[in-house]
Each structure stands twice: as structure tokens, then as C-alpha cells.
Length: 129
View 1 (cartoon, one colour):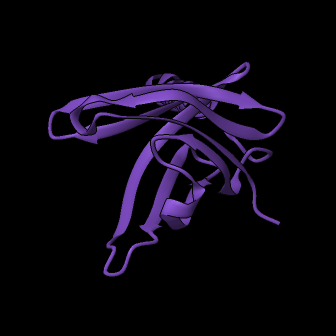
View 2: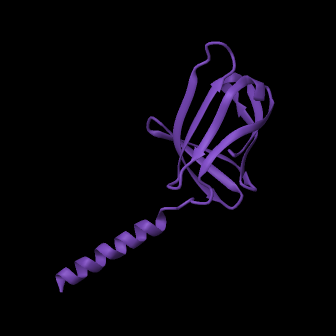
């Protein structure tokens, strides 16, 4: 009887964990910057991509267009709920959450303010072809 209860407990735990883990099969893929306005624009980048993975993780990669520009790479997690995508980045013991629009399969960052650099911009990313 104890073995049966243990087996049922393990199965229920596995079902709960599987059910709580989102799968973003449809949304997963590479998104490329195609429009940027504000204090920074499209010409400031050689490339800027966001790759969404099915398991809710993502990778951001970008490189500035100026000579000697460094490659920027960051990993984070994301959740999509309705028309919003929430990106969560771990910084030390803290989590930084950013909420953007996810509209018609595109990521729209509207009026993003980077106060430490005194920069405001809007950017749009669409799935790479």
C-alpha cells in the first residue's frame, strides 16, 4: 500500500511540474530587430537579436556598428501571457523584469528608458526568415 501511495505521489508531482512548465513551441525562434527609433536607431547596430526557446529561456545578442564594438550577450527567461511578454534577467540575487508587447508574433519595446545612459528608444523585432 505504501509503495502504491508513493507511486501515485511521484506521478502527481511529475504531472504538476510538467503542467506548470510553459511550452512556447509556436513562439520559439529567432527574432531580429527591424525598426528602432529614439535616441538609438537601427543604424547603431550590426545586429540585434532575441532568440526565444520552447522552454521559456531566451538569448539576446547584439553588436554595435561602431569600429571596435563589443558583442553583447545575455540569457534570461520569459513568459508570454496574452499580448505581453515578460523578460526576467537575473542580476546577482535580484531579478529584473521587463514587460513588452507581443503582438502578431512580434516583440515591441515601446518607449524604453535607460536612465543611467539618458536614452529612450522604441524597438520592434520580428521572426527571422
